[in-house]
Length: 233
Image (cartoon, rainbow, N blue to C red; front, side, top):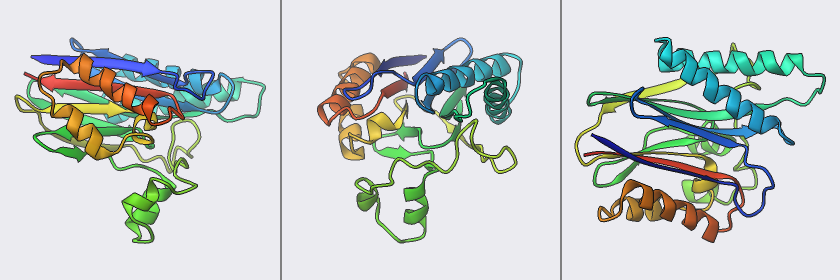
């Protein structure tokens, strides 16, 4: 049995919530998309991505193929608009079938696994992650780097030939938890704090999500924040 909680908040400094999310236990699909592009364009891009992934997964496509179709939909929609401003979105999506899970992502929205300790499953497609990988900065320095919000991959803006849809799969055992979130959470809340909240098994999944979003707001709420938490009973 899967228990899940979910919440999206505009944050304390933005007028629009350009994040979107989806959760359907029957379909076995959950996702978070963090739109970008200013005005309503980020909101449109994240919604287009959500709708495309849901549609394609329902049609039987793989998670990676569904995310690529979402990219095509956003690019097609952008070309139909008169404005020249690009619009795009990050995406992290999760599929669960029986006791197996698969995560797919583009950008810096994240997936974590809790199995007594917190482990980040996704690897950010971001400028600071590239610097970390090169040994130029530490993860601690990345948290305060002036370019920490620069993504190197996003649906709708990355050349489709260069788009890197990464996937990772594993077994979801009883007692384990999967967390999906936009960077509005990880910008304000460090992994140690996330871990301490996921360890509180007396909280329901929804209560845990509520606490995580509150922690992001207490930390400054500089961006939209969206969190989905799944637990296998």
